Image (tube, rainbow, N blue to C red; front, top):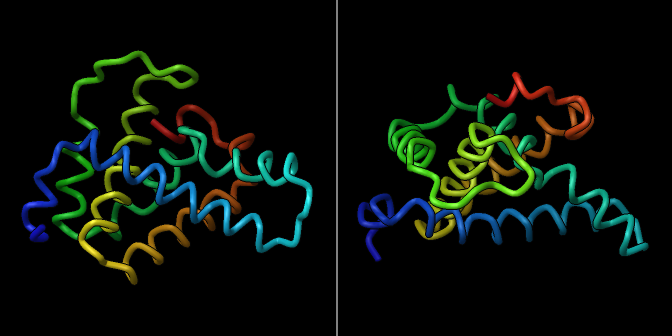
Length: 141
């Protein structure tokens, strides 16, 4: 699939794929800490994959996105929600979905370097704020 066509895929589909790509990177990141207990690995991963954390990290890097990445993020964020988010405020959920759509887009476009950089910046932003516990709702909106 051509890169220009990927950008126009349904953003929900991009987010679906991006969710799994990001989850894999997060799991590798927490595994690399040397933790060997599966429950603790899961607990560590949760702080990175929560909607609030993803929304916060995306907002932190908005100025660093390219025009096409920003256009995709806005399109994904503005898409009507068809299902009720389970554990997140709808505004935060939209930002998190936009983040996942960006990850899905970069993955499908085979922009490995950019994907790695965005994910690394995300992990660092979340770590700077000690995970989700210190991210206020207003920070992620």
